[in-house]
Length: 461
Ligand SMILES: Cc1cc2nc3c(=O)[nH]c(=O)nc-3n(C[C@H](O)[C@H](O)[C@H](O)COP(=O)(O)OP(=O)(O)OC[C@H]3O[C@@H](n4cnc5c(N)ncnc54)[C@H](O)[C@@H]3O)c2cc1C
Image (cartoon, rainbow, N blue to C red; front, side, top):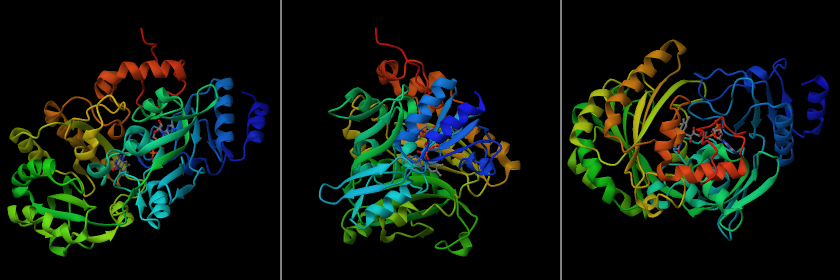
């Protein structure tokens, strides 16, 4: 690559091209997880689809590896790769809401906070995750689990269409009617098939919710988990609740006497009639009185950003995950053992329900296999101090190793680092893997997009 090649590329762009010599290179190469420290060759901050097309052509011509970044939240930092051209979509930020059809078109550079802000005024929401700084791009393409999963399904279940730039630089719309094989593949197959520049979603009527945590002492954790495993399966779909081991943060609304205490908890979010919300949680209170609860009416964007302050960008993260069908007494005992040993304030274990509406889509309707699992489990070792990186990693790995035999095979791709290996990806997609490989062979036969939980191209026999 000559300087003239780079200049020619730069001149094609409406956005910026950032190289290692540029002052902003150090900040622009960073991702949310500070455990990741990669040095790309260049970062192209795409202003529009034309910039994305130019970037793909340039990378192909120069034989450069590409990585794709939307929100930069990926666990394994797959938005940035060493020596690659980073296709940074974060400047493509717009949210166009059609209040008549309740459809919303979202630019790939948006975070879910951007989306919630623009939609809330219309009393609408799209199912997403639990932290508002997460990118729409990566979360959606991997599936999307969050506070609205039991009510409206995974994020991909509300996706209607996407604009995609393919490996040869061509542009395609993927929907149920146009390029339906590509549309199937991107609903869970991650960034394997192209660069998605915008998403069209069907939004849902959600404005005020009742939400917040209940916490119990650790010596009641086994009992609470046993109650929770029965309750959440049959609870009304308006009610979502994920189980957690946590250290109580030293901040309101938690009372001072609980600050820094290791506890277990359930974080609820109820989208039904507010007057019924408290009645629904009476069984939880009756079973074991929580040491503290904060369950109150709030705007949906408030619950979506409830954890933002605790988890700013720049912490050290190590993730391990599994899908779980059944929570046996034996598994619960191991959860309590390892969950009681949370190594730091920020480290946690979450069990996200993926039942309710998420179960009404079959395992093969989208690539997102394991629809029949009941939970997506994630164990995250987190701390601000890089000196603790090995410590939190070892805890997460040990916890996961103990619980993995109780998993149902595979894990949510968005909760994986970059160290899981090919078999793990195959287990995750199960019977859908070969179909994904065939779609990959059609749209990206050279595996140009391979900085992801990679699906190897293979034409069907
Ligand atoms: C604090 C935190 C909380 C989280 N909570 C949840 C949660 O509640 N629910 C949940 O489901 N997940 C959650 N996640 C996981 C999250 O879904 C993944 O980390 C996801 O990859 C983040 O998307 P992003 O756009 O921010 O990531 P990026 O790092 O920007 O991208 C990740 C990867 O996705 C692909 N990709 C991203 N955008 C595009 C695009 N436009 N076109 C093609 N490929 C693309 C690329 O392969 C890229 O490498 C959480 C992550 C964090 C760090």
